[in-house]
Image (tube, rainbow, N blue to C red; front, side, top):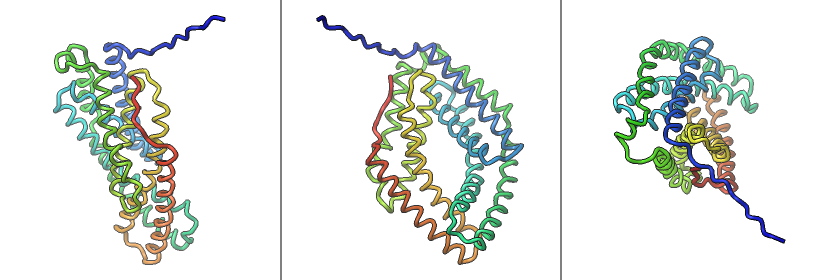
Length: 294
């Protein structure tokens, strides 16, 4: 009986020219999706489109950050500033929409309280929507499109060879490590019951690492599905916990009867306790560790 030799095929990273071509494609695709969603939100202001536009704006900013060493610094900063304005403007509207959905899921708010709460939030949504439409009109896509094309044009071998002495794969690996470091630091303290600030920072750090993997996976032709699924799970729990904080801030700014405030406070306390327990279980059962596929 003879032993058989098992050959393991090693997947090599794509060559620099392919990485650059895919990088240009990813940047253009993300910009196109942002422009499309901006048009949809301006027309219909659908809740799902609002959420998707906010995510698209954040993801595109993350992609721009990856291009920063290879493009004019001023162009990157100016473009990110314009897009950040959209992201921030959508935040208040998104919080109102999420608050409306949240309270509809909690039957412990009686009908008399619901009507007052929903009416106030609905009126606020109308005001925020008007403000958002002004922001979207002021978002000059044609002028910004020229900036995007200029940045994409700088993603060429000559420019990268001139400004950098390291490989693109090594650069992506370095970015990944730097994005993971705050996650590693914050995981140890984020489950402490009163440490909302650590959970807020952890949520943002996880979101940035997730966007990074979503961007580089098609560029490097690597399947990061397992880590992406886990990051989404963490982000979902931490996002729900952050929503409670945002809802508290939102309601404190509104003129509501004492009975409504008392009722919502009870809901917030119960929901926060459940989410904290879920978060602790997630850390214990599915610990988050560093990964990067070369």
